[in-house]
Amino acid sequence: MNGEDHQAEVEPWLLLVDFIRDELGLTGTKRSCEVGVCGACTVLLDGKPVSSCATLASEVKGRSLTTIEGLSAGAQLHPIQEAFLDEAGFECGYCTPGMILSVYALLCENPAPHEEEIKNYLSGNICRCTGYVSILSSVKRAAAIMRRETPPSKEPSLSTQRRVDGFAKIKGNALYTADLRRPGMVYAKILRSPLPHAVIKRIDTSAVEKHPGVVAVLTRADLADINPYYGPLVKDQTILAIDKARYEGDSIAAVAAESPQIAEEALSLIHVEYEELRPSLTMDEALAGNAPRLHDFTSDHGTTFPGYPSVDEEARKHPNVSFHYGWSKEDVLKGFALSNRVFEHTFFFPKVSHYSLEPHLAMAEWTQDSLSVRTSTQHPFTVREEISEMFGLPPEKIRVIVPFVGGAYGNKNHTKLEPLAVALARKAKRPVILSLTAEDAFRTVSKPA
Image 1: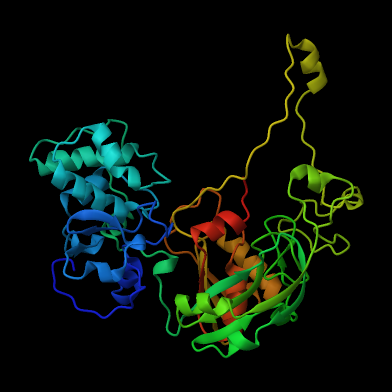
Image 2: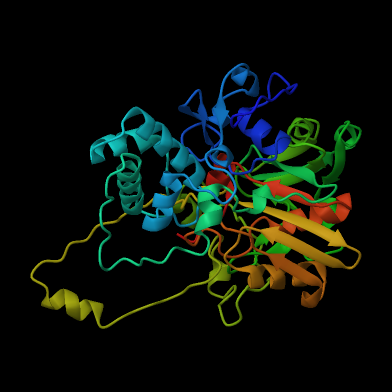
C-alpha cells in the first residue's frame, strides 16, 4: 500500500474505494458514479489504473496498490503534479487525483504519447470543468519533463501564477463534504416511492427501529412541529412526502445508522401502504384539463425570493400550473411579416443533468440550540435562510459551512438535501451525513436547466 506492507481483515463484499477511504482514511480517492465509468476513484493496481468502486478490497491481496497520497511525499511533488500546477490542469479538483494517476500509468507505458494516444488513454477519466485542454497541456508538459526535455512554452496569454488551491487538489489533500468526519457521525439513506403518484396511507417502522445499528428513523410524523415546505422558487417541496408521493423516487422516509450498509439494509424493513393514483407521464397529459392535480394550490407556502409570483388566480383554474410568466421583446408578429420565410415547429427537450462529479450531499450537526450544516452548495445563505424558516431557528444560530465543492454549474443552487439531513440529525441527536448516489441525483434532484 503506497510502498508499505499493510494487513487488514475485510468483509468479502467491501469495495476497495470504501476500504481506502473509510478504513485507511485516504480521502484523495473520490467516490462518484459508483459504477466504474467516471474515473474519480482511480487507483493503480500493480501499476495499472483501475476503478476502486468496481473492485473488491479482497482482490488486492498480495498486490501493489497506489493512491494519490503515495505518488509523492510531504511537500515534494511528482513531475506530473508539477505540470498540472503549472498548466492549471484542474478546476474543482474532484477528478484530479484519479486523472493524475491515470497519467502516471500512461507515461510509464508510453513516455512520448501523441495527443490522440493521451485522449484514448484518459477516456475513462471524466472532467466536467476544464474542457480537457489544460489537462492535455499538463500531460504534454509532464511527459517532456520526465524525458528530461525542455517542456513546451506556455501561451503568452496564460497566467504563470499557480492557483492557491492547487497544491491541495493535486496532492489529494483537498477536503470535500464527503471527506469530513464528525465524532459520533451516522449515515443516512432515503426510502423512495416506487410509484409516480400515490396516497401514502400508512408507514410501519416497527421492524426497522429494532434493527441493530439503526439510530433513528424519520417519517412525516416527525415533521409536525416544523414548517416542512421549501423550494427553489415556489415552496412546493417537503422534506418527506406528507400526503402523497408525487413522482417515482419521492422521499418517503429516511434512516440513520452506524454505517451506510446498515442504513441501506434497514430501508427494506420499512413497510408503506400506498393507494395508487393516476399519474401524468407527459407534458401534454399534465396540461390537459382533466389531468390529476399534483399540488393543492389552496395552500400557498410562498416563494424563496420576495417579488417572484407564487400562485396566481389564473393558474388556480388549471390543475398543474402554479403561475404564468410572460416575457417579450419587440413585436413578434411584425417580425414575421418582415420575414421572407417563417418556420414553425415544436421542440421537445429532455431534462438536463449537469452531473457534478461530487455527489449531492449534506452533513448536519446540532449542538444544544445551534446548528452546523456542512454541504456542497452554491447558495449557503439561501440554505441558512430556508432552514431558519423551516425549523424556527434564528439565522445567527445556524452555520452553513461550504468545503471544497466538486463541481456545481448551477446544479447546486438553492436548497437540496440540507433540510432532510437537519431533520434526521435532530431526531438522531448525532451528526448525520446524507449523500446521494449519481443514480439518485439523476432521478430526484431538481434541476434549473
